[in-house]
Image 1 (cartoon, rainbow, N blue to C red):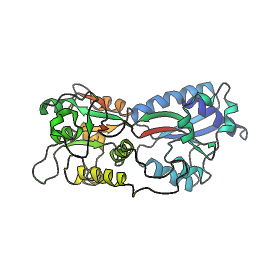
Image 2 (cartoon, helix red, strand yellow):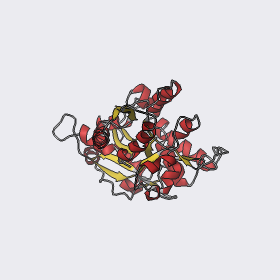
Image 3 (cartoon, rainbow, N blue to C red):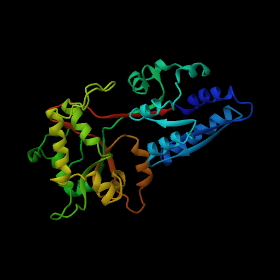
Image 4 (cartoon, rainbow, N blue to C red):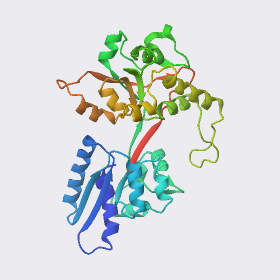
Length: 323
């Protein structure tokens, strides 16, 4: 959803009480490339709506913590980027405006054209608080082609799987075998290079849970019970922990954030990780950071993330919108 369609609704509501020019503050977490696109949209919006000025801000670290602090201090922005996992914290505090009544200010707007599951994910008790912008399965493995060639491993074709132990006989079709072969470590020292890293600490664990058919709560919309005693959750948790603490093929969250003071994408661009798991939104930033002819450049590509050999193909899915 383009921001130009949300801002008129918010602005119209404010303009009802304003006699002078309207000034809006718009905050997002997008990085340089995404922010450039939004700045263009903001300029188009301002040109189409004289008298409304938009102060555009980007917050690329600790976004939710800073936004919550601004809400508590009563200096929250007029429009903010939001996601399904966090909006309830704001809506339950009365910090978000219900959007449905505002749609009448945008002629031709039709909410039914939106992906229903994403609309529902941004709604609370039947009321929509976040206008969906995008949806993106977290199913992409970014891989360093140079390191694959050096290890003699064929590029992934999307048919790889994993079980709870390495299957060397499957070679490149076994994700754990590939992860192992790409890891570079001497003795018990911190690996010089890990085979794989998830984009954030829970991504790989959540992927394993989903592909095993397990869930951590009884009902995602109205949870009443945690299901951490499910044998599948216990097995999946132990499996993912062992990859970091026992095999050392995947860095732990502590190693990434505290020891290396980095993040998974930076580790990938620095060739400290051979494979990096995230969503398609990483592509623009990686193209910017890894330009041919620049220091540290290497060729890379993407492949779909593996699937549990005895499970189903399923991945955590993220989304975002504006509130």
